[in-house]
Length: 45
Ligand SMILES: [Zn+2]
Image (tube, rainbow, N blue to C red; front, side, top):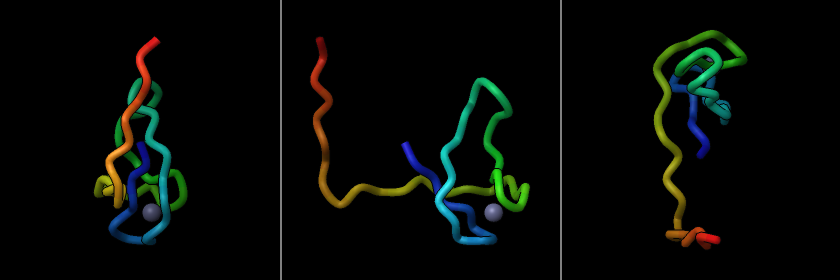
């Protein structure tokens, strides 16, 4: 799931386990969740 930094407007891949929510480019901590235009269904194996 991608997030967008509210400061630098870059798309950020968030690794929750490693460092929590934080922009890897500018270090900003307020990110918004990217909304996919279409809902994708993930196939469960
Ligand atoms: Zn940023």
